[in-house]
Image (cartoon, rainbow, N blue to C red; front, side):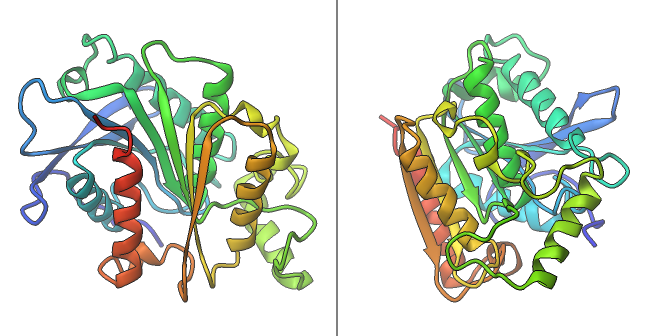
Length: 291
């Protein structure tokens, strides 16, 4: 699963251009950059840094579903986007994906003064309006990158918000109405142990953010959590939303639930009514602070 890739380039349906740029020569890793073709010299647009999902094991930034999704989102929101590719388990276990994602962030931030290696990033992003986002494991990564930003500032780089879509969080004890069936919970833990063989289990802070650093240290001012009614991870996303509100973090948090839908439905059925509604909500979230 998740091995198909598509090349970058101008998408005629959305009029969004893309290209792949090496950010980690030592690991042979590239980011895929997206920009609306209508962008004029001098235009400054919000910058989205996106982390793909796939349980830390499958998919890439170059997968058809992610490429199509980013083209559509960039056109809808009129933003610049950087889709991060990272090393995957089991060949490269946790924390490789987090380490690579932080390296990618540092590479992006190196353009904030206008003298980085990639002209699209030198010329067009508004580095005062940076957003992180991801789905499933990518949402997990986006959370942890925002927590790290709260501790380690990147010069010239202000993270306004994060969007966590169907976040891949878990824990040893069920929360809310989360499934309690032992066999199912052991299966979910097994997938996590595949990605992280050295883990202490599902209360590992990488997997259970409530067991990690205080959420009040989240390094952004706005959060949007998206959950799906039939997703087994829904209750964990709702729990994160409630605990972040209670943490003393000073930002604004909102939640959106897609009725009747399952995990990452928007990637499999991007033109359905609920997927379009979620895309528009995301685009609005990215543009809320525009003058």
